[in-house]
Amino acid sequence: MSDQLLITSPDDPALDALCAELASRASELDKTEAWPSEQLRRCGDYGVFRWFMPVEFGGFGWSDLDVIRGYLRLSAACLTTTFIITQRTGACQRIVASQNDALRQRLLPELVAGRSFATVGISHLTTSRRHLGTSVLRAEETPDGFVLEGYSPWVTGAIQAQVIVIGAALDDGRQILLALPTDLAGVSLPQPPRLVGLSASHTGEVRCRQVRVGREWLLAGPVNEVLKAGTGAGTGGLQTSTLAIGLASAAIEYLEAESRQRSDIAGPAAELRREHTRIEADLVALAVGVSPCSNEELRVRANSLALRSTQAALAAAKGTGYVVGHPAGRWCREALFFLVWSCPQPVLAANLCELAGLGD
Image (cartoon, rainbow, N blue to C red):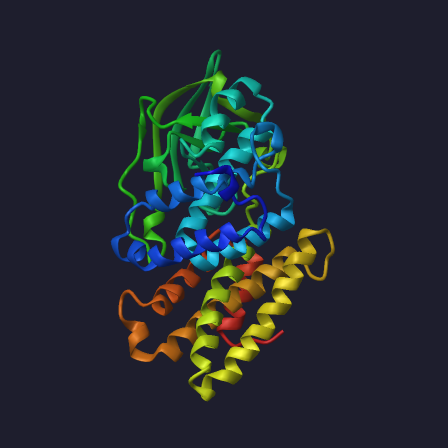
């Protein structure tokens, strides 16, 4: 692709073309559950992977606000592809944040150019399996590196990745981050389970059985709370809310289109649009350092809007929307994802109260 067609800002007309391509393939992707290799290739062609990277590593160095604006557009077009990109970006940003310069030089050129794929396996350090009281992926330090034993429960695209940025805990409670090559002896990648939505993200377990990883693959640690040692995928922050708001916008746009022929839909569509405008304004404010609400409050509202707007789209579509292949049914299933993706306990509690009809 010509450099003139690279998406260098969220206002670039080329972003419209890419989103149209992604949207045209979203229903088929949902039906086949095949890895979106062509969609990701096209994102690479358009320079999407450069949005998130500093200029010194070949990226465009987009601001937080520009990244959010880009994610809003992509997630409205195809949530599965966009979710995969968030996990890929999280891996890249952890690599950038590392002090291991040799490893950065080894991995980043191919990643920024879109010629290789990396992902993250860190949910067990944040929200998943935390109730067990001990890490499900343990590390033993050796003179030349670490030995990994256990598993990471939710890793997106692991069977497609050359490298997984993975977290593990030592017996003393300290944690490490490693860039784990997927071809090391002892690494196994089971076929990922079918999910209610986003099955094409191929999200599932990565298992490690006495996996020896050399110290040259170390990104951070051993330290307490290693995820606070650098930037990453924005777990529990604005990124997840952004994708929920983007999904809601797709459903609301559908309602608005239907309302032009059906007056009974006009009122609900207009009210959902007003709510969407307010929540997007708060998202933008948070991105530039203004605090009209907390990140958690925004997440609660984004989850709620995604659930309600997608169900409204299904109701408007009637029986047609309940047929596999119609976007309204897919949007409803995708909205459920935000109840489980990196969902902190206070956010879950607030959403449960809303679903149960409990007021403030």
